[in-house]
Length: 627
Image (cartoon, rainbow, N blue to C red; front, side):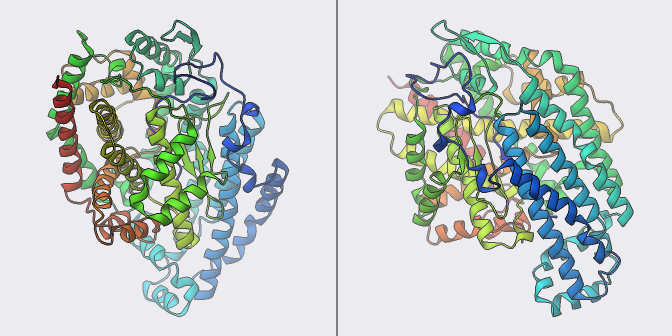
Protein backbone atom coordinates (compact mmCIF):
# COMPACT_ATOMS: atom_id res chain seq x y z
CA UNK A 1 0.00 0.00 0.00
CA UNK A 2 1.10 3.58 -0.58
CA UNK A 3 1.99 5.33 2.66
CA UNK A 4 2.17 9.09 2.63
CA UNK A 5 4.46 10.81 5.04
CA UNK A 6 3.33 13.20 7.77
CA UNK A 7 6.38 14.90 9.18
CA UNK A 8 6.18 16.67 12.54
CA UNK A 9 8.76 18.98 14.02
CA UNK A 10 10.16 17.57 17.26
CA UNK A 11 11.48 20.78 18.74
CA UNK A 12 10.22 24.15 17.64
CA UNK A 13 10.31 27.39 19.54
CA UNK A 14 7.42 29.60 20.58
CA UNK A 15 4.18 29.67 18.63
CA UNK A 16 1.82 32.50 19.45
CA UNK A 17 -0.62 34.70 17.64
CA UNK A 18 1.84 37.30 16.39
CA UNK A 19 -0.40 40.26 15.66
CA UNK A 20 0.36 43.73 17.00
CA UNK A 21 3.04 42.59 19.44
CA UNK A 22 6.20 44.50 20.16
CA UNK A 23 8.19 41.43 21.20
CA UNK A 24 7.69 37.70 20.91
CA UNK A 25 6.83 37.49 24.61
CA UNK A 26 4.15 40.21 24.63
CA UNK A 27 1.47 37.56 24.38
CA UNK A 28 -2.30 37.79 24.84
CA UNK A 29 -3.85 36.31 27.95
CA UNK A 30 -5.68 33.64 25.99
CA UNK A 31 -5.29 31.99 22.63
CA UNK A 32 -7.33 33.40 19.73
CA UNK A 33 -10.20 31.52 18.17
CA UNK A 34 -9.81 30.19 14.66
CA UNK A 35 -12.64 32.44 13.49
CA UNK A 36 -10.50 35.45 14.44
CA UNK A 37 -7.71 34.54 12.00
CA UNK A 38 -7.62 36.12 8.53
CA UNK A 39 -8.29 33.59 5.75
CA UNK A 40 -4.92 34.30 4.12
CA UNK A 41 -3.24 32.67 7.12
CA UNK A 42 -5.29 29.46 6.89
CA UNK A 43 -4.76 26.42 4.71
CA UNK A 44 -7.38 25.72 2.05
CA UNK A 45 -8.80 22.43 3.27
CA UNK A 46 -11.72 23.10 0.90
CA UNK A 47 -9.37 22.22 -1.96
CA UNK A 48 -9.78 18.61 -0.79
CA UNK A 49 -13.52 18.68 -0.11
CA UNK A 50 -15.59 21.86 -0.34
CA UNK A 51 -17.60 20.94 2.75
CA UNK A 52 -18.21 18.32 5.42
CA UNK A 53 -21.19 17.20 3.35
CA UNK A 54 -18.97 16.54 0.34
CA UNK A 55 -16.66 14.52 2.59
CA UNK A 56 -19.63 12.45 3.74
CA UNK A 57 -20.54 11.66 0.14
CA UNK A 58 -16.96 10.57 -0.55
CA UNK A 59 -16.99 8.44 2.59
CA UNK A 60 -20.24 6.76 1.56
CA UNK A 61 -18.91 6.11 -1.95
CA UNK A 62 -15.73 4.52 -0.60
CA UNK A 63 -17.70 2.37 1.83
CA UNK A 64 -19.77 1.01 -1.04
CA UNK A 65 -16.72 0.51 -3.26
CA UNK A 66 -14.62 -1.70 -1.00
CA UNK A 67 -16.14 -4.82 -2.55
CA UNK A 68 -14.57 -3.92 -5.91
CA UNK A 69 -11.55 -5.99 -4.91
CA UNK A 70 -13.62 -9.14 -4.38
CA UNK A 71 -13.60 -10.08 -8.08
CA UNK A 72 -9.82 -10.50 -8.05
CA UNK A 73 -9.36 -12.72 -5.02
CA UNK A 74 -7.95 -16.13 -5.87
CA UNK A 75 -7.27 -15.18 -9.50
CA UNK A 76 -4.14 -12.99 -9.47
CA UNK A 77 -1.93 -15.69 -10.97
CA UNK A 78 -4.18 -16.23 -14.00
CA UNK A 79 -3.06 -13.27 -16.14
CA UNK A 80 -0.91 -10.16 -16.21
CA UNK A 81 -3.91 -8.00 -17.12
CA UNK A 82 -5.97 -9.15 -14.15
CA UNK A 83 -3.10 -8.58 -11.72
CA UNK A 84 -2.48 -5.10 -13.13
CA UNK A 85 -6.17 -4.22 -12.86
CA UNK A 86 -6.29 -5.43 -9.27
CA UNK A 87 -3.35 -3.22 -8.27
CA UNK A 88 -4.90 -0.26 -10.09
CA UNK A 89 -8.23 -0.71 -8.28
CA UNK A 90 -6.48 -1.02 -4.94
CA UNK A 91 -4.51 2.15 -5.58
CA UNK A 92 -7.58 4.09 -6.69
CA UNK A 93 -9.37 3.12 -3.49
CA UNK A 94 -6.30 4.04 -1.46
CA UNK A 95 -6.13 7.49 -3.04
CA UNK A 96 -9.73 8.19 -2.08
CA UNK A 97 -8.98 6.95 1.43
CA UNK A 98 -5.93 9.21 1.61
CA UNK A 99 -8.01 12.25 0.66
CA UNK A 100 -10.72 11.42 3.17
CA UNK A 101 -8.14 10.78 5.87
CA UNK A 102 -6.24 13.97 5.15
CA UNK A 103 -9.36 16.13 5.34
CA UNK A 104 -10.39 14.46 8.59
CA UNK A 105 -6.97 14.87 10.21
CA UNK A 106 -6.65 18.50 9.10
CA UNK A 107 -10.12 19.43 10.36
CA UNK A 108 -9.29 17.71 13.64
CA UNK A 109 -6.04 19.64 13.96
CA UNK A 110 -7.88 22.89 13.38
CA UNK A 111 -9.56 22.24 16.74
CA UNK A 112 -8.98 18.95 18.55
CA UNK A 113 -11.86 19.68 20.93
CA UNK A 114 -14.58 19.39 18.27
CA UNK A 115 -16.43 16.11 18.74
CA UNK A 116 -17.57 15.92 15.12
CA UNK A 117 -13.95 16.18 13.96
CA UNK A 118 -12.88 13.49 16.42
CA UNK A 119 -15.62 11.18 15.19
CA UNK A 120 -14.83 11.85 11.53
CA UNK A 121 -11.17 10.99 12.13
CA UNK A 122 -12.13 7.81 13.95
CA UNK A 123 -14.55 6.76 11.21
CA UNK A 124 -12.05 7.09 8.38
CA UNK A 125 -9.42 5.29 10.46
CA UNK A 126 -11.83 2.38 10.82
CA UNK A 127 -12.75 2.45 7.12
CA UNK A 128 -9.08 2.58 6.17
CA UNK A 129 -8.55 -0.58 8.22
CA UNK A 130 -11.41 -2.20 6.33
CA UNK A 131 -9.71 -1.33 3.03
CA UNK A 132 -6.49 -2.85 4.32
CA UNK A 133 -8.43 -5.96 5.27
CA UNK A 134 -10.17 -6.12 1.89
CA UNK A 135 -6.82 -5.79 0.12
CA UNK A 136 -4.96 -8.10 2.48
CA UNK A 137 -5.16 -11.05 0.08
CA UNK A 138 -3.18 -9.26 -2.62
CA UNK A 139 0.40 -9.49 -1.43
CA UNK A 140 0.21 -13.05 -0.04
CA UNK A 141 -1.43 -14.16 -3.28
CA UNK A 142 1.21 -12.45 -5.44
CA UNK A 143 3.85 -14.35 -3.50
CA UNK A 144 2.26 -17.66 -4.43
CA UNK A 145 2.84 -16.90 -8.11
CA UNK A 146 5.94 -18.62 -9.46
CA UNK A 147 8.70 -16.03 -9.89
CA UNK A 148 9.22 -16.97 -13.55
CA UNK A 149 5.53 -16.53 -14.25
CA UNK A 150 5.53 -13.17 -12.47
CA UNK A 151 8.54 -12.06 -14.51
CA UNK A 152 6.71 -13.00 -17.69
CA UNK A 153 3.67 -10.99 -16.57
CA UNK A 154 5.84 -7.91 -16.09
CA UNK A 155 7.41 -8.32 -19.54
CA UNK A 156 4.09 -8.54 -21.43
CA UNK A 157 2.16 -5.88 -19.48
CA UNK A 158 3.33 -2.23 -19.55
CA UNK A 159 0.82 -1.47 -16.77
CA UNK A 160 2.34 -4.16 -14.59
CA UNK A 161 5.89 -3.18 -15.51
CA UNK A 162 5.24 0.08 -13.66
CA UNK A 163 4.99 -2.02 -10.48
CA UNK A 164 8.25 -3.93 -11.02
CA UNK A 165 10.17 -2.33 -8.14
CA UNK A 166 7.21 -2.87 -5.84
CA UNK A 167 6.95 -6.52 -6.87
CA UNK A 168 10.67 -7.11 -6.38
CA UNK A 169 10.37 -5.59 -2.92
CA UNK A 170 7.64 -8.06 -2.07
CA UNK A 171 9.89 -10.90 -3.13
CA UNK A 172 12.69 -9.51 -0.95
CA UNK A 173 10.47 -9.50 2.14
CA UNK A 174 8.60 -12.69 1.26
CA UNK A 175 9.51 -14.46 4.47
CA UNK A 176 7.74 -11.78 6.50
CA UNK A 177 4.40 -11.66 4.66
CA UNK A 178 1.79 -13.93 6.19
CA UNK A 179 -0.91 -16.06 4.59
CA UNK A 180 -3.99 -14.19 3.44
CA UNK A 181 -6.16 -14.93 6.46
CA UNK A 182 -3.49 -13.84 8.90
CA UNK A 183 -2.82 -10.64 6.96
CA UNK A 184 -6.54 -9.89 7.09
CA UNK A 185 -6.54 -10.33 10.87
CA UNK A 186 -3.56 -8.00 11.23
CA UNK A 187 -5.30 -5.39 9.12
CA UNK A 188 -8.41 -5.60 11.29
CA UNK A 189 -6.25 -5.27 14.41
CA UNK A 190 -4.64 -2.05 13.23
CA UNK A 191 -7.12 0.38 14.87
CA UNK A 192 -6.57 -1.47 18.17
CA UNK A 193 -2.78 -1.55 18.00
CA UNK A 194 -2.71 2.12 17.01
CA UNK A 195 -4.98 3.07 19.91
CA UNK A 196 -2.11 3.90 22.34
CA UNK A 197 -0.89 6.66 20.03
CA UNK A 198 -4.38 8.05 19.61
CA UNK A 199 -4.99 8.01 23.37
CA UNK A 200 -1.68 9.80 23.91
CA UNK A 201 -2.70 12.39 21.31
CA UNK A 202 -5.99 13.07 23.07
CA UNK A 203 -4.23 13.55 26.41
CA UNK A 204 -1.45 15.65 24.90
CA UNK A 205 -3.49 17.85 22.56
CA UNK A 206 -6.99 17.95 24.03
CA UNK A 207 -6.98 17.18 27.78
CA UNK A 208 -3.75 18.72 29.04
CA UNK A 209 -3.94 22.16 30.69
CA UNK A 210 -0.78 24.02 31.66
CA UNK A 211 -2.00 26.85 33.84
CA UNK A 212 -0.33 30.26 33.92
CA UNK A 213 3.02 31.88 34.58
CA UNK A 214 4.23 35.45 34.91
CA UNK A 215 6.29 36.69 32.00
CA UNK A 216 9.33 38.99 32.13
CA UNK A 217 7.16 42.05 32.82
CA UNK A 218 5.18 40.31 35.55
CA UNK A 219 2.08 39.84 33.40
CA UNK A 220 0.22 36.59 34.01
CA UNK A 221 -0.15 34.58 30.79
CA UNK A 222 -1.71 31.26 29.88
CA UNK A 223 0.96 28.66 29.08
CA UNK A 224 0.60 26.34 26.10
CA UNK A 225 2.98 23.86 24.53
CA UNK A 226 3.96 26.33 21.84
CA UNK A 227 4.42 29.15 24.32
CA UNK A 228 6.52 26.91 26.53
CA UNK A 229 8.94 26.31 23.68
CA UNK A 230 9.23 30.06 23.33
CA UNK A 231 9.80 30.73 27.02
CA UNK A 232 12.64 28.18 27.00
CA UNK A 233 14.64 30.83 25.13
CA UNK A 234 13.81 33.70 27.48
CA UNK A 235 16.83 35.57 28.82
CA UNK A 236 15.10 35.68 32.22
CA UNK A 237 16.05 32.53 34.11
CA UNK A 238 13.10 32.86 36.48
CA UNK A 239 10.72 32.79 33.52
CA UNK A 240 12.48 29.78 32.00
CA UNK A 241 12.34 27.84 35.27
CA UNK A 242 8.72 28.74 35.94
CA UNK A 243 7.71 27.75 32.40
CA UNK A 244 9.62 24.48 32.72
CA UNK A 245 7.99 23.58 36.03
CA UNK A 246 4.45 24.51 34.97
CA UNK A 247 4.84 22.70 31.65
CA UNK A 248 6.25 19.43 33.00
CA UNK A 249 4.06 19.33 36.12
CA UNK A 250 1.02 19.25 33.83
CA UNK A 251 2.12 15.75 32.78
CA UNK A 252 2.57 14.42 36.32
CA UNK A 253 -1.11 13.49 36.91
CA UNK A 254 -1.04 11.52 33.64
CA UNK A 255 2.33 9.88 34.33
CA UNK A 256 1.05 6.34 34.85
CA UNK A 257 -1.45 6.66 32.01
CA UNK A 258 1.28 7.75 29.62
CA UNK A 259 3.53 4.98 30.87
CA UNK A 260 0.77 2.48 30.08
CA UNK A 261 0.08 3.92 26.60
CA UNK A 262 3.76 3.97 25.63
CA UNK A 263 4.32 0.51 27.07
CA UNK A 264 1.34 -0.79 25.09
CA UNK A 265 2.68 0.82 21.92
CA UNK A 266 6.09 -0.84 22.34
CA UNK A 267 4.42 -4.18 22.99
CA UNK A 268 2.35 -3.72 19.83
CA UNK A 269 5.59 -3.14 17.92
CA UNK A 270 7.00 -6.37 19.33
CA UNK A 271 3.78 -8.22 18.51
CA UNK A 272 4.14 -7.28 14.85
CA UNK A 273 7.84 -8.17 14.84
CA UNK A 274 7.08 -11.60 16.23
CA UNK A 275 4.22 -12.44 13.91
CA UNK A 276 6.24 -11.23 10.92
CA UNK A 277 9.20 -13.34 12.03
CA UNK A 278 11.73 -10.58 12.69
CA UNK A 279 14.26 -11.08 15.49
CA UNK A 280 13.81 -7.49 16.70
CA UNK A 281 11.58 -4.48 16.21
CA UNK A 282 14.56 -2.55 14.84
CA UNK A 283 15.12 -5.09 12.07
CA UNK A 284 11.44 -5.02 11.17
CA UNK A 285 11.34 -1.23 11.09
CA UNK A 286 14.45 -0.78 8.95
CA UNK A 287 13.81 -3.73 6.65
CA UNK A 288 10.80 -2.04 5.11
CA UNK A 289 13.13 0.36 3.31
CA UNK A 290 16.08 -2.01 3.14
CA UNK A 291 18.18 0.12 5.50
CA UNK A 292 21.05 -1.80 7.10
CA UNK A 293 20.69 -2.14 10.88
CA UNK A 294 24.35 -1.15 11.08
CA UNK A 295 23.35 2.42 10.10
CA UNK A 296 21.32 2.77 13.32
CA UNK A 297 23.95 1.33 15.62
CA UNK A 298 26.75 3.27 13.91
CA UNK A 299 24.88 6.51 14.54
CA UNK A 300 24.70 5.85 18.28
CA UNK A 301 28.27 4.59 18.43
CA UNK A 302 29.55 7.70 16.64
CA UNK A 303 27.78 9.93 19.15
CA UNK A 304 29.18 7.96 22.10
CA UNK A 305 32.69 8.36 20.70
CA UNK A 306 32.33 12.11 20.19
CA UNK A 307 30.57 13.56 23.24
CA UNK A 308 33.42 15.93 24.11
CA UNK A 309 32.04 18.84 22.02
CA UNK A 310 28.63 18.49 23.70
CA UNK A 311 30.24 18.40 27.14
CA UNK A 312 32.26 21.48 26.18
CA UNK A 313 29.07 23.27 25.16
CA UNK A 314 27.47 22.43 28.53
CA UNK A 315 30.46 23.90 30.35
CA UNK A 316 30.42 26.96 28.08
CA UNK A 317 26.70 27.45 28.74
CA UNK A 318 27.24 27.29 32.48
CA UNK A 319 30.07 29.82 32.28
CA UNK A 320 28.30 32.30 30.00
CA UNK A 321 25.02 32.13 31.91
CA UNK A 322 26.91 32.54 35.18
CA UNK A 323 25.01 29.80 37.00
CA UNK A 324 26.22 27.49 39.73
CA UNK A 325 24.29 24.54 38.36
CA UNK A 326 23.06 23.90 34.82
CA UNK A 327 19.46 22.68 34.55
CA UNK A 328 17.22 21.62 31.68
CA UNK A 329 15.66 25.11 31.55
CA UNK A 330 19.12 26.51 30.76
CA UNK A 331 19.76 24.34 27.70
CA UNK A 332 17.96 26.67 25.27
CA UNK A 333 18.72 29.96 26.99
CA UNK A 334 20.27 32.51 24.62
CA UNK A 335 24.03 32.81 24.99
CA UNK A 336 24.09 36.15 23.17
CA UNK A 337 21.95 39.28 23.20
CA UNK A 338 19.18 40.07 20.71
CA UNK A 339 18.38 36.39 20.33
CA UNK A 340 14.67 37.07 20.57
CA UNK A 341 14.14 39.44 17.66
CA UNK A 342 10.60 39.22 16.33
CA UNK A 343 10.10 38.32 12.65
CA UNK A 344 6.74 39.01 11.06
CA UNK A 345 5.47 36.02 9.11
CA UNK A 346 5.66 37.92 5.81
CA UNK A 347 9.30 38.79 6.52
CA UNK A 348 10.04 35.15 7.32
CA UNK A 349 8.56 34.09 3.97
CA UNK A 350 10.71 36.63 2.15
CA UNK A 351 13.87 35.52 3.99
CA UNK A 352 13.22 31.86 3.22
CA UNK A 353 12.59 32.45 -0.49
CA UNK A 354 15.66 34.66 -0.87
CA UNK A 355 17.90 32.46 1.27
CA UNK A 356 17.15 29.37 -0.81
CA UNK A 357 18.44 30.92 -4.03
CA UNK A 358 21.26 28.28 -4.23
CA UNK A 359 18.55 25.69 -4.98
CA UNK A 360 17.71 27.43 -8.25
CA UNK A 361 15.11 29.75 -9.78
CA UNK A 362 12.61 26.97 -10.47
CA UNK A 363 12.64 25.95 -6.82
CA UNK A 364 12.24 29.57 -5.69
CA UNK A 365 9.30 30.21 -8.02
CA UNK A 366 7.48 27.04 -6.98
CA UNK A 367 8.15 27.84 -3.33
CA UNK A 368 6.67 31.32 -3.67
CA UNK A 369 3.60 29.85 -5.37
CA UNK A 370 3.11 27.49 -2.45
CA UNK A 371 3.12 30.35 0.06
CA UNK A 372 0.46 32.14 -1.99
CA UNK A 373 -1.82 29.16 -2.70
CA UNK A 374 -3.38 28.09 0.60
CA UNK A 375 -0.74 25.55 1.55
CA UNK A 376 0.01 26.95 5.00
CA UNK A 377 -1.98 27.27 8.24
CA UNK A 378 0.04 29.84 10.12
CA UNK A 379 -1.00 30.79 13.66
CA UNK A 380 -1.77 29.01 16.92
CA UNK A 381 -5.44 29.00 17.97
CA UNK A 382 -7.56 27.35 20.64
CA UNK A 383 -7.51 23.56 20.32
CA UNK A 384 -5.19 23.54 17.31
CA UNK A 385 -2.72 20.70 16.84
CA UNK A 386 0.69 21.51 18.27
CA UNK A 387 4.08 21.92 16.63
CA UNK A 388 4.43 21.93 12.88
CA UNK A 389 4.12 19.38 10.12
CA UNK A 390 3.68 18.90 6.38
CA UNK A 391 1.25 16.50 4.79
CA UNK A 392 -0.66 15.91 1.56
CA UNK A 393 -1.98 13.29 -0.82
CA UNK A 394 -1.12 12.35 -4.38
CA UNK A 395 -3.99 14.42 -5.81
CA UNK A 396 -3.74 17.36 -3.39
CA UNK A 397 -1.25 20.14 -3.11
CA UNK A 398 0.98 19.99 -0.02
CA UNK A 399 -0.32 21.32 3.29
CA UNK A 400 1.74 22.78 6.15
CA UNK A 401 0.59 23.31 9.73
CA UNK A 402 2.47 25.93 11.73
CA UNK A 403 1.96 27.66 15.06
CA UNK A 404 4.06 30.63 13.98
CA UNK A 405 5.38 32.87 16.76
CA UNK A 406 7.92 35.18 15.18
CA UNK A 407 11.16 33.82 16.66
CA UNK A 408 14.22 32.95 14.62
CA UNK A 409 13.42 29.30 15.36
CA UNK A 410 10.08 29.70 13.63
CA UNK A 411 11.70 31.29 10.58
CA UNK A 412 13.73 28.11 10.23
CA UNK A 413 10.66 25.99 10.92
CA UNK A 414 8.98 27.66 7.94
CA UNK A 415 12.00 26.71 5.81
CA UNK A 416 11.96 23.17 7.24
CA UNK A 417 8.30 22.42 6.58
CA UNK A 418 8.32 24.05 3.16
CA UNK A 419 11.27 21.81 2.34
CA UNK A 420 8.99 18.86 3.00
CA UNK A 421 6.24 20.52 0.97
CA UNK A 422 8.46 21.10 -2.06
CA UNK A 423 9.77 17.54 -1.87
CA UNK A 424 6.16 16.28 -1.86
CA UNK A 425 5.25 18.67 -4.68
CA UNK A 426 8.01 17.39 -6.97
CA UNK A 427 7.50 13.72 -6.16
CA UNK A 428 3.81 13.80 -7.07
CA UNK A 429 4.73 15.35 -10.41
CA UNK A 430 7.38 12.81 -11.35
CA UNK A 431 6.31 9.52 -9.76
CA UNK A 432 3.22 7.35 -10.30
CA UNK A 433 0.92 6.91 -7.32
CA UNK A 434 2.44 3.60 -6.26
CA UNK A 435 5.81 5.30 -5.76
CA UNK A 436 4.62 8.63 -4.37
CA UNK A 437 5.15 7.50 -0.79
CA UNK A 438 8.40 8.38 0.87
CA UNK A 439 10.70 7.12 3.55
CA UNK A 440 11.49 9.48 6.39
CA UNK A 441 15.09 8.47 5.80
CA UNK A 442 15.09 10.77 2.78
CA UNK A 443 12.17 13.09 3.64
CA UNK A 444 14.07 14.86 6.42
CA UNK A 445 16.97 15.62 4.07
CA UNK A 446 14.81 17.95 2.00
CA UNK A 447 13.69 19.89 5.08
CA UNK A 448 16.99 20.11 6.93
CA UNK A 449 18.90 20.98 3.77
CA UNK A 450 16.64 24.03 3.49
CA UNK A 451 17.57 24.99 7.03
CA UNK A 452 21.28 24.45 6.40
CA UNK A 453 21.29 26.55 3.23
CA UNK A 454 19.30 29.31 4.93
CA UNK A 455 21.70 29.32 7.89
CA UNK A 456 24.74 29.54 5.65
CA UNK A 457 23.01 32.40 3.79
CA UNK A 458 22.41 34.29 7.06
CA UNK A 459 25.92 33.68 8.40
CA UNK A 460 27.48 34.90 5.16
CA UNK A 461 25.54 38.16 5.48
CA UNK A 462 26.12 38.79 9.17
CA UNK A 463 27.52 42.32 9.43
CA UNK A 464 28.59 42.42 13.07
CA UNK A 465 30.12 40.17 15.67
CA UNK A 466 26.85 40.24 17.60
CA UNK A 467 24.82 39.21 14.56
CA UNK A 468 27.21 36.38 13.76
CA UNK A 469 26.96 35.19 17.36
CA UNK A 470 23.17 35.11 17.11
CA UNK A 471 23.34 32.79 14.11
CA UNK A 472 26.14 30.68 15.58
CA UNK A 473 24.05 30.31 18.73
CA UNK A 474 21.09 29.15 16.67
CA UNK A 475 23.18 26.83 14.47
CA UNK A 476 24.70 25.15 17.52
CA UNK A 477 21.28 24.76 19.16
CA UNK A 478 19.89 23.37 15.91
CA UNK A 479 22.55 20.66 15.76
CA UNK A 480 21.90 19.84 19.42
CA UNK A 481 18.16 19.50 18.84
CA UNK A 482 18.09 17.95 15.37
CA UNK A 483 21.17 15.77 15.62
CA UNK A 484 22.37 15.02 19.16
CA UNK A 485 18.96 15.08 20.86
CA UNK A 486 17.47 12.79 18.24
CA UNK A 487 20.32 10.34 18.79
CA UNK A 488 19.54 10.46 22.51
CA UNK A 489 15.89 9.69 21.79
CA UNK A 490 16.90 7.00 19.29
CA UNK A 491 19.01 5.33 21.97
CA UNK A 492 16.02 5.53 24.33
CA UNK A 493 13.80 3.85 21.73
CA UNK A 494 16.35 1.08 21.32
CA UNK A 495 16.55 0.65 25.09
CA UNK A 496 12.80 0.31 25.66
CA UNK A 497 12.29 -2.05 22.71
CA UNK A 498 15.21 -4.24 23.76
CA UNK A 499 13.70 -4.35 27.25
CA UNK A 500 10.53 -5.97 25.90
CA UNK A 501 12.42 -8.22 23.48
CA UNK A 502 14.47 -9.61 26.36
CA UNK A 503 11.36 -10.33 28.43
CA UNK A 504 11.61 -7.30 30.70
CA UNK A 505 8.75 -5.19 32.01
CA UNK A 506 7.94 -1.60 31.10
CA UNK A 507 6.71 1.04 33.52
CA UNK A 508 6.64 4.81 33.90
CA UNK A 509 9.59 4.52 36.29
CA UNK A 510 11.63 2.51 33.78
CA UNK A 511 10.97 5.06 31.04
CA UNK A 512 11.99 7.92 33.32
CA UNK A 513 15.12 6.21 34.61
CA UNK A 514 16.25 5.22 31.12
CA UNK A 515 15.88 8.69 29.63
CA UNK A 516 17.59 10.27 32.65
CA UNK A 517 20.66 8.05 32.29
CA UNK A 518 20.91 8.82 28.57
CA UNK A 519 20.57 12.59 29.09
CA UNK A 520 23.26 12.50 31.77
CA UNK A 521 25.65 10.54 29.58
CA UNK A 522 25.30 12.85 26.60
CA UNK A 523 25.36 16.20 28.43
CA UNK A 524 27.98 15.15 30.93
CA UNK A 525 28.54 16.14 34.56
CA UNK A 526 27.66 19.83 34.16
CA UNK A 527 23.92 19.16 33.70
CA UNK A 528 21.62 18.42 36.62
CA UNK A 529 18.90 16.12 35.25
CA UNK A 530 15.87 17.17 37.30
CA UNK A 531 13.16 14.63 38.09
CA UNK A 532 10.61 16.50 35.96
CA UNK A 533 12.96 16.37 32.95
CA UNK A 534 12.67 12.58 33.12
CA UNK A 535 9.09 12.98 31.84
CA UNK A 536 10.57 13.35 28.35
CA UNK A 537 10.55 9.55 28.45
CA UNK A 538 6.74 9.72 28.48
CA UNK A 539 5.67 12.81 26.56
CA UNK A 540 7.32 12.56 23.10
CA UNK A 541 4.71 11.74 20.42
CA UNK A 542 7.31 10.34 18.03
CA UNK A 543 7.81 7.27 20.23
CA UNK A 544 4.46 6.02 18.93
CA UNK A 545 5.96 5.60 15.46
CA UNK A 546 8.70 3.09 16.20
CA UNK A 547 12.27 4.00 15.28
CA UNK A 548 11.24 7.32 13.83
CA UNK A 549 13.53 9.92 15.36
CA UNK A 550 16.93 8.53 14.32
CA UNK A 551 16.14 9.65 10.81
CA UNK A 552 16.27 13.27 11.90
CA UNK A 553 19.93 12.74 12.79
CA UNK A 554 20.91 10.76 9.69
CA UNK A 555 19.04 13.15 7.44
CA UNK A 556 20.64 16.14 9.13
CA UNK A 557 24.07 14.69 8.41
CA UNK A 558 23.15 14.07 4.75
CA UNK A 559 21.67 17.56 4.44
CA UNK A 560 24.86 19.18 5.70
CA UNK A 561 26.85 17.48 2.95
CA UNK A 562 24.38 18.52 0.25
CA UNK A 563 24.10 22.09 1.53
CA UNK A 564 27.86 22.53 1.37
CA UNK A 565 27.83 21.47 -2.28
CA UNK A 566 24.89 23.75 -3.08
CA UNK A 567 26.55 26.75 -1.44
CA UNK A 568 29.80 25.98 -3.26
CA UNK A 569 27.87 25.98 -6.57
CA UNK A 570 29.35 22.63 -7.51
CA UNK A 571 28.81 21.91 -11.19
CA UNK A 572 25.53 20.09 -11.75
CA UNK A 573 24.52 20.11 -8.07
CA UNK A 574 21.22 21.96 -8.64
CA UNK A 575 20.13 19.38 -11.19
CA UNK A 576 21.30 16.54 -8.92
CA UNK A 577 19.42 17.96 -5.98
CA UNK A 578 16.21 18.61 -7.93
CA UNK A 579 16.34 15.00 -9.14
CA UNK A 580 16.77 13.87 -5.53
CA UNK A 581 13.66 15.86 -4.58
CA UNK A 582 11.65 14.18 -7.34
CA UNK A 583 12.23 10.55 -6.33
CA UNK A 584 9.70 8.90 -4.02
CA UNK A 585 9.75 5.20 -3.26
CA UNK A 586 10.80 3.87 -6.68
CA UNK A 587 14.22 3.21 -5.13
CA UNK A 588 15.42 2.33 -1.67
CA UNK A 589 16.30 5.45 0.35
CA UNK A 590 19.95 4.55 0.85
CA UNK A 591 20.30 4.27 -2.94
CA UNK A 592 18.45 7.56 -3.53
CA UNK A 593 20.98 9.30 -1.31
CA UNK A 594 23.88 7.53 -3.00
CA UNK A 595 22.63 8.88 -6.34
CA UNK A 596 22.83 12.35 -4.79
CA UNK A 597 26.40 11.69 -3.66
CA UNK A 598 25.76 10.85 0.01
CA UNK A 599 26.58 7.33 1.24
CA UNK A 600 24.95 6.78 4.64
CA UNK A 601 26.49 3.31 4.95
CA UNK A 602 29.83 5.06 5.53
CA UNK A 603 30.76 7.06 8.65
CA UNK A 604 31.61 10.27 6.78
CA UNK A 605 28.23 12.08 6.80
CA UNK A 606 27.81 11.64 10.58
CA UNK A 607 31.48 12.38 11.26
CA UNK A 608 31.22 15.52 9.15
CA UNK A 609 28.34 16.88 11.23
CA UNK A 610 30.19 16.14 14.47
CA UNK A 611 33.24 18.00 13.14
CA UNK A 612 31.03 20.91 12.11
CA UNK A 613 29.51 21.06 15.58
CA UNK A 614 32.89 21.12 17.27
CA UNK A 615 34.05 23.90 14.93
CA UNK A 616 30.98 26.03 15.62
CA UNK A 617 31.36 25.67 19.40
CA UNK A 618 35.03 26.70 19.10
CA UNK A 619 34.07 29.70 16.94
CA UNK A 620 31.46 30.86 19.44
CA UNK A 621 33.87 30.46 22.35
CA UNK A 622 36.50 32.51 20.51
CA UNK A 623 34.07 35.29 19.56
CA UNK A 624 32.71 35.52 23.08
CA UNK A 625 36.26 35.80 24.42
CA UNK A 626 37.00 38.81 22.21
CA UNK A 627 37.02 42.19 23.93
